[in-house]
Length: 96
Image (tube, rainbow, N blue to C red; front, side, top):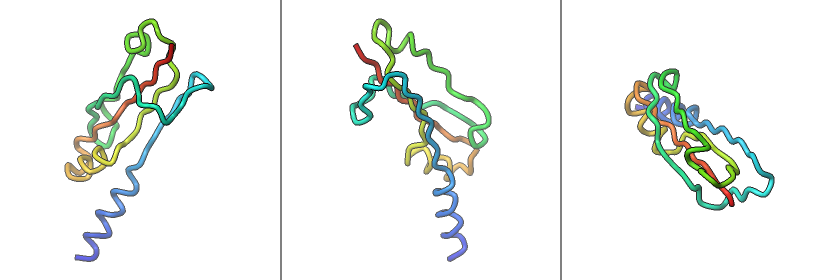
């Protein structure tokens, strides 16, 4: 039983991933994102990468930053499905 618990804990800790791309130095990372969505990826994220157009999301506003992150919910779902289904969260911040 201990081995199973350690395996589950290790798989939860190894799945943390975040990619940030800041386009404006005045971006406040504590502000709520303008856009947030969940994208389907498969086989530990090797298939089905998300595609988002910053121009379509921000329209007339200036894109400030975007982030692709594995949220705790994403990690739990990936663990339960053994990596077959591995959702990814994408956040975009737009300015004036």
